[in-house]
Amino acid sequence: MAKAAHVALAAAAGVVAGILLAPKSGRETRQDIADKAKDMKQKADDKREHVMRAMREGGEALKDGAHRVNEEVRAAGKEARARGKAIADEAKESAREAKRRTEENL
Picture 1 (cartoon, one colour):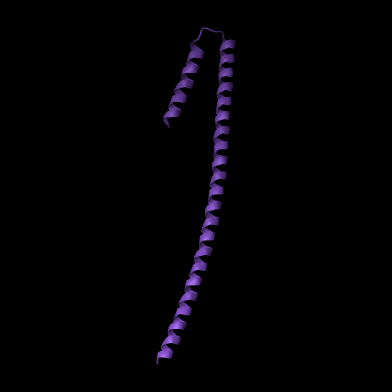
Picture 2 (picture 1 turned 120 degrees about the horizontal axis):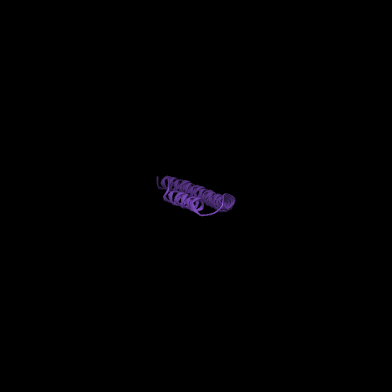
């Protein structure tokens, strides 16, 4: 169990022990327990909502980043293909020129 969970559990146990050992009537003690339980549930719900919001935002940021990287990779691939074709065309032209010169010199 994580350290934070141990701390939360110890705090909850302390609250319950304090309520049970306090010199109050049974009705007051039950009301205090109900109030504390309601408060703890609200805090847990708030924390859950915070975590869910952070996860949604993180997921959206991840998708946006992946989309941008995908677009950059596609653009780089197109540029590499264009450069490769240009180099191949130049190589063919150089080969034709070399062949023509060789034939002229024979």
